[in-house]
Image (cartoon, rainbow, N blue to C red; front, side):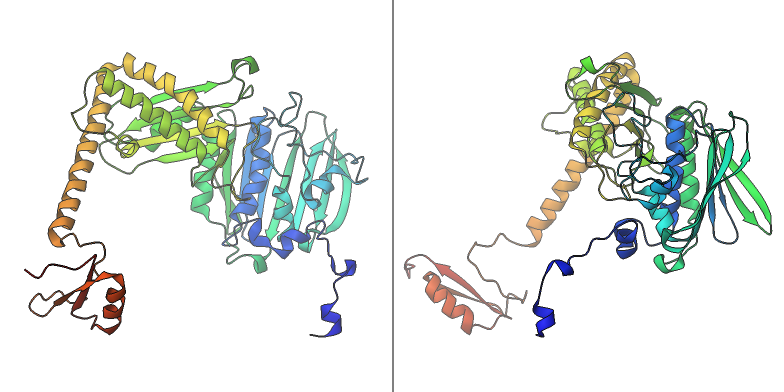
Length: 465
């Protein structure tokens, strides 16, 4: 090893600042398959404006040149000078990791008390992994614009372009994904369409639209669910053979005095339906973010519903002697959409596909158990149909397990614990050597032919009678 390589001093310590961590390890911050996640980060910011009650429209456009644009009519990203960084706040948001207005979750006056943003990373990823990004803001009676170049560097500083009425507010973001960071720079339109439909369901007061440019013309599709989760879920399970009417519900902490564990505004809304056939719909969201891999909130839903149905079966003496109902019996044919509001959710990774907040299990389980127990006992006939479906599944599962066990036991005899079996299954050829003790057994194993000779060590001397 050279002398230079063996030294290790303060000069060897590097600090990755600004957007460098994203450029250095992009896979830690986004999905490298395509730029969908980079676009979703921008959409989530616009959606948070809708959740806060300021935006009524969120418009997404995919252009032929590979760029994507998100426009909302919210308050507009702040453009005044940040008192610490001494640069416009919008520049801080796009170039400084862990910056944003969504950290003060316990402050009742916070601009984003319940929101999808958590770490102040989102649009930094969109900017860093683009060859160009344009941000345009309508705010404070004027139109402002700032442009970023490759790797998120400021290309054109923030400028005021023209005056506008004070009532005109909103944000427009357009970015061009950098091909070197993605397997493909094409957006997955099916995934994007599903996401926007879900966002429209979660925000009944907001209209979402997707425009696709083709041959210079833009075709627009929009989604708006005035009835929220009810309209969305009814459309999702239309045509399926429902065992009972759909159970819709919601429950939130109205006042902090209600709970020592949860804050005001936390809770969930849900739609539940059991169907006899067809594709199963299982969707979950936290603060409007889709959790495709579920998480602790889904586990809480499963627990609360399972306990309620189990209690209903016991109360109406519907169970069979010796038959145990397990959660999978309840959920085998259950369709659900679950949307939670959690003050400070913890996700597994920046892509946020799975919720790992431990308190979410208890929150959702408590929020849903009493309402569904009440619903089942108010709709006894429908409750019994659901219970019968669950019991049939339990019987089927038990019989299947018994068949599997019989098949296993009939195929191979139970072997003594110390038997070292041979490979051959031909009883006319196989040999069994019974030896005294483990020591002799070890020697015999080393000398045997593994193909047809088995060894069984015994304790003590066998009687030769």
